[in-house]
Amino acid sequence: MYDKITALNANSRKVLRSIWKHDGISRIEIANRLDLDKSTITKITNKLLKEKIIKTSEMGDPGPQGGRRPVGLSIVGESGIILGVELRTYECFVLALDLKGRIKGEYSKKYEQVSFDGAIESLISLINQLIQTEPVFSIGIGLPGIVDHEEGIIEKSYPLSVVEPFNLGACLREKTGLTVLLENDANCGCWSEYLSKENSSRTNMLYLSGTLDRKIKIDEEIRGSGVGAGILINGRVLHGMNFSAGEFRSVFVKKKETEQFLAENRIDMLEELASNMAMIINTFNINDLVLGGDFHDYGEELLELFARYADLNWAYDGPANCRYRFSGMKDRDVAYGAGIMCLDRFYSV
Image 1 (cartoon, rainbow, N blue to C red):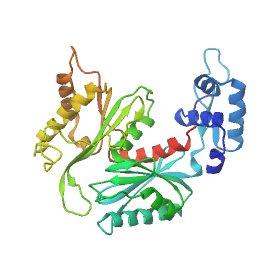
Image 2: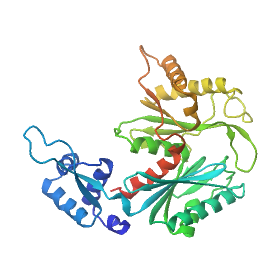
Image 3: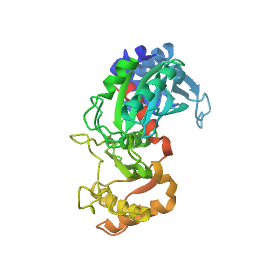
């Protein structure tokens, strides 16, 4: 399947991507979306059907005149899997996705050695186990820190105790023989929310994830807070020149030695976070604030807190133009986003 898809020409890949993004789409809808001739779409889809890359199903209503139901097209998802990984400070967490993006399995492995090297050994061990069960096409990995997603390099990661650049992508490709993509964990949250839903290319999203009372360093019993932001502008993840977009400390912190927030108790910390994010929401015209990770534990009151601070910061009459919600995957956001990121690359034109 992998070789068949990578060999497709540009128009065929456009069609395949449309089918992946819009499961059950008809040939007419594809032609309208891509502005391609219907005969071209028919020729391409017939080839994809013959190669067993896609399949048909009757979907939708026949319409007021009756007749046959429209024939929908779907990806054949069962021919292999994509692995989405989150490297946490205490375990590696993996989701296996089929080629449609559906979760087929969930796995985790505690680190036998509590260190970055131990984390990588545990991850390689788990990947090699999963490779034995069915074909794996690629691996996406989300982790905290500054990540050069283009080269697969971890530039720095305080939680994982990486202080010098480390090419994790190359390391894992050598050990597994698979395509490996790396991304910052909060950016993976953006991938998860944006690509798993019908979102406009004009979407401006702020995704927040983090820990407020958990172990935040892999090789020490340090507990505390570490919150990261993923920023989506006009439907594109913002990385910044040095891949550090989304890394932040509270504007109320005045010393380098201070933690991420000036506040020490949880309630004040959340208010400080909401105050920091209010200016970003309004300055960048963020229309979708998504809270992932531990933030699910705080309920609707937390969403109301962010809304209140954003409204106070808004310079004009009325409320800030933003929607506030929790992420769809909760503690699986990062792993799912890493896998979806791989699928997006897999079906790219």
